[in-house]
Amino acid sequence: MPGLYHICYLSVAKLSALQPTPEQGFEAITAAALKANAASGLTGCIIFTGQHFLQVLEGLQDDVEDTFGRISRDTRHTDVRVLSEGPIEAREFPEMAVSCDGGQSLTAEALTEISAVLDFPQHQLHIREIRTLLSVITQTSRKQDALLAG
Figure 1 (cartoon, rainbow, N blue to C red):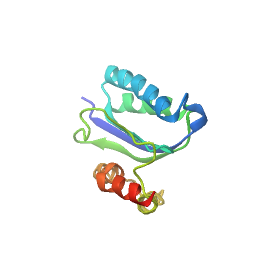
Figure 2: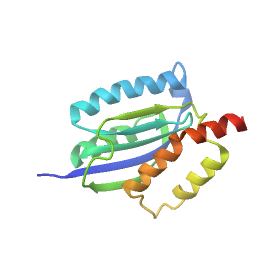
Figure 3: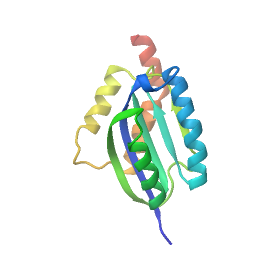
Figure 4: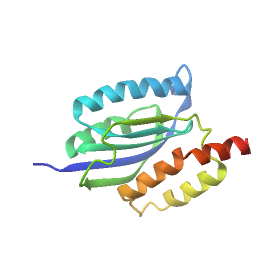
């Protein structure tokens, strides 16, 4: 029996393609994705920061790769960069998680920290590193930092 597989990618949102607003465009993407992913047995997490998409897909390898193939050809984003892929022992995101924070949650310091991790293309992130990265991005104190800095 085939095992579980994951792909995590980061991409740059093409804001002009997310209509009528970026947030509403993201909601439309996630509504369709949740339905399609459930039908394919995929789980994961997707975050929209207002400028970037960060997504983890988990499931059977063929299903993950087919879905990622469609995602990578989607014209609503560019510069798709695989951060991690490979077999996993268990799902890290047994329920599909979705977050849209309109870019208000990340301070310049947080973006610098994340960029430092992601600026090494030869380094494949382990699924635990991805989970840590996702928690940094969605961390409440980061949102408070952004509000204070703004």
